Each structure stands twice: as C-alpha cells, then as structure tokens.
Image 1 (cartoon, rainbow, N blue to C red):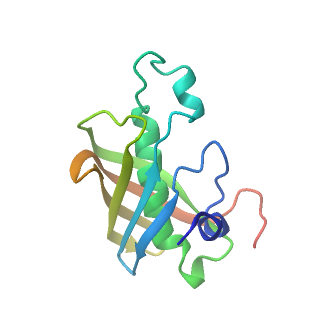
Image 2 (cartoon, helix red, strand yellow):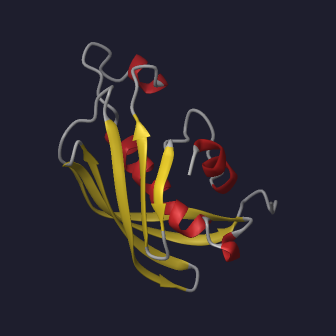
Length: 146
C-alpha cells in the first residue's frame, strides 16, 4: 500500500505522517515502514551534530503502522484510532537517517471499540523498539465522516 492509499486511511499529515508504505495488512497483523531521512524536520533540533530520531516519534510511527490494521477495515470508515496507553515500551537502539524503520504489529485484543496491539520495530532485522499499545476506535473529533 503506497502513501496515497495510506493517507486515505490515516488522518495524519506532514510532518506527522510517519508511515511510508504498508507491506502486509491482515485481520490481526500488519507490517509497514518509515524511511528515515536527514530531511526530517525533527533532525534540525534533535542532536543536529549526531541526528537521532526521537524515541517518541519511533513509537508514534509504530502506532501509526498498527492503526492501519484497524483503519483498513470497512466498518472503521470515518472512524479514528486514538492511543490510550503505551506499556512495556523499550527503545533498544537509536534510529538514524538512512534507516528503514520496519514495524510489525499484531492484534492482542479487540473488544468492541477498545483494543491492544503488540508492535516491534526493526532496522535491518535488528529490534530497535517494542511496545504494547492500547487504543480506542471512535468518531473523529471533528465529527466528520469520510
């Protein structure tokens, strides 16, 4: 799934759309990635002499990939996935320009509109981050439906 298709499912836009491509999406699993480039706006101020992607943005990218698993379901049209919690987050290695941040997320539980997703992010096959995300599926705050 390319960026144009991703934009039709996620409400995020530049500079906070942190998914470039979705490779696989299924009922309970999704794989997608973010190409990290030196042109990212956060590198201007986040350790400019030694650019490192902020950990919270690594987690945000992971959460956006995970959201695609739910957002692509027909019954989710016009709804948004709101993050309600992050547990067991581990940032194991810095993510730097030139890295391809690949996230695999698996649905742990979905009861009604509340769920949990387990996500692992890797660069060149090495785990750089992992977390358990809690979310709720709800109408967008704008009240608009697509």
